[in-house]
Image (cartoon, rainbow, N blue to C red; front, top):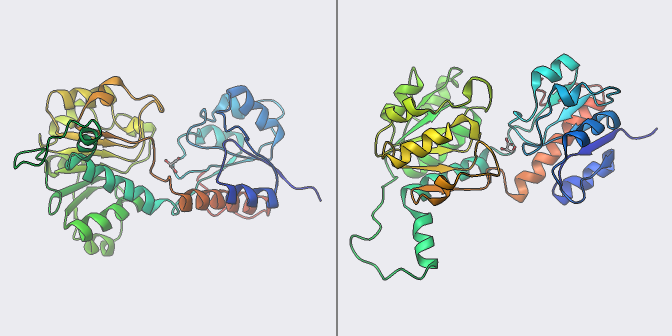
Amino acid sequence: MSKPKVLLTRQWPAEAETRAKELFDVHLNEDDHKMSVEELQEAMKNYDVVCPTVSDFQINAEILNVEGRKCKALCNFGVGFNNIDTDAAKAAGVVVTNTPGVLTDCTADIAMTLLLMVARRAGEGERLVRSKEWDGWCPTHMLATKVTGKKLGFIGFGRIAQAVAQKAHFGFGMQLSFYDPYPPSDEVIEKFSATQLDSIEEVLRNADFVTLHVPGGGSNTNLMNTERFGMMKKSAFLINTARGDVVDEPALVKALKDGVIAGAGMDVFAKEPNVTEDLLSMENVVIFPHLGSATTETRVAMGMCSLDNAQAFFDGKEPPNRVA
Ligand code: DGY
């Protein structure tokens, strides 16, 4: 019996591509280019399953409704799936899956890295040393913000947020508060001695650091806007490892320039890979190129998870991580 046809839209770590080749008649993106809308439309006609990623053009009705579509499932390589229009997928009868769980700790590590770096001016300090402008230790040089014991507020308190909570509370003695319309169990809340608040605004007013953990798109677009930056403490920092569109970037730039907030640590941006000149030039901003899940262990695990979903789909079973 011939194997099902599967397309990986971008290059995957070798171990995951090897398993894909064992399981399926797989097409790899050898030169790792970003596929055009036309290529994705063509893929819909030629493959049973397509495995897209966050950096592809959004798989929307224009792509899904192409005549002669063969593709019946999109097994996303990533936990966030705002690169897929799930309403259009549902309407077209196309199954959508994601890769939760396997990138939780690594993404939380990056959130903590950003938090520590922006609070302690680590990027700025490193740039200073590399520029050979550093002229030695003195008691007033590069004074920054202490992290240990400070208040950390969460917008969204799901899996990745809880992994940040684990590190921040038990590693750095931080006091935690959160807002989430779907809060975790009392047991989880008690474990972190976290305070559940009734609104985003309450979190913003209380926190020394605010970390975002909500999906992108829909009503979360521009969730952090001028009004909400105005509710944060002047001494507070924003950390974003969620999705770029959750933050109104021009509003963030203005808040940083006007001293409305103290700084920001960003792993994601509204129009990746473009980062505005303003953010690039600010010393109180730490910027990473969407590194949350970027460890070999995690990226291999994401590939395996995506393939498990595809395999379950072909076996006629409910894929373990179906989201639409
Ligand atoms: C994720 O898995 O959501 C990462 O941000 C990459 O897509």
